[in-house]
Length: 111
Image (cartoon, rainbow, N blue to C red; front, side, top):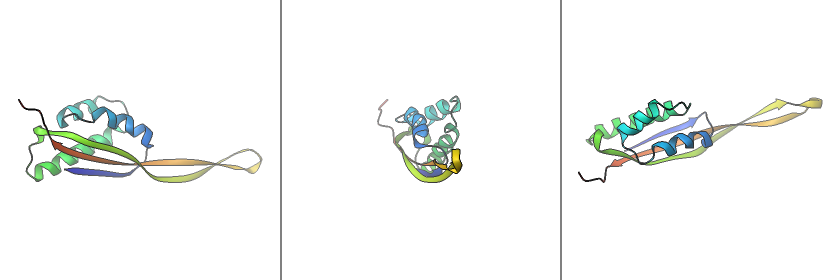
């Protein structure tokens, strides 16, 4: 099951730090790890995982048997702003956004 977060107002480089932490983990283990993480992106990614897990439950999958199969962070829109500089000039500032794609899949481990 998939869930997508678009135009999240944080740079992809910072969001990838959180995404790399949860890649390949089970849903419950990833949510636990994110709840203790002190990063701004941990909250929206936590909501994204919960949304994808709920989408999977609606489709008939068991929440406990799901792992994070793919999580990808791409660059979104870039808002261009200007900062005033000396002699009446302006320097550009790039306000970056991120697109996060999350895909859950069944666990391959056999107990």
